[in-house]
Length: 358
Image (tube, rainbow, N blue to C red; front, top):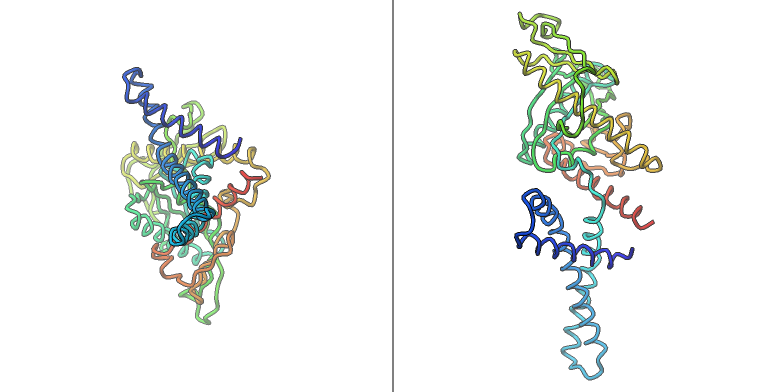
């Protein structure tokens, strides 16, 4: 279907919904559904109106320029206007096409952030802690709520594993490109000879799943309770408050022991389990749907090395889009991370637009 025809249908549908909502013919359930659709179409219709207004004005300006009887000053004004409109039209066209791209149903969801130390021993654990703090600061920059679910510390300031929920507007849409292997190159504090070490941490960003998103049968769960322990195995609780949940069909295991209440630990563990199972199902469906798009930025492949943080050179390089920023301190503070994320979003949109046009 031609783009113009598709836009005509969308504008007509928006007008139809507006008429239905202003009348009294819809029951409460249909009214809610129509309100949601009308609200979602609003920004697109507004952008289509701007595009069509610009196209009309360009046609009028070109007609004026071609008119042999037109006043010279009027022609000059029309030419100036036409030049400006030709400059602005591609951006409006692109904005409309981006809005037409299929939406990721999880984009508006909150996220569960999981960071694990990879190769590199204690230095990898220290880097995992640095990354966790980077995302905590980034969340603060966006006025998102960052709630720590679990931290497994090494005792030397590093994190073997850290899990948090990030709550706010468009959290998953912005963080989903962070999944993958993050590599660090720096001189460890314990390194006397000044040699640069390379180590890594794995980041997984999962959309937080509601009960309606994924059904988990109680019969598929094995729940074990035990006493929580602190660093080095020391007991920090005298009751069996720690919880381990095993999802038997997939073998997925989640443990929680941060809370003193068994009930709270179970609730947190279920939240993480639900997110992991939902994410696994999304990955499975996406693999089937887009087997030929393995190079896409948002593939979420956790084994892919996506970014290098080089401290001696103050350099941060995202390997998927060959973007390098020489402001590593600002990236680690969360302030410059948006520059990378915006570039990743733009690259993903461009790839999907190219696929749409193919």
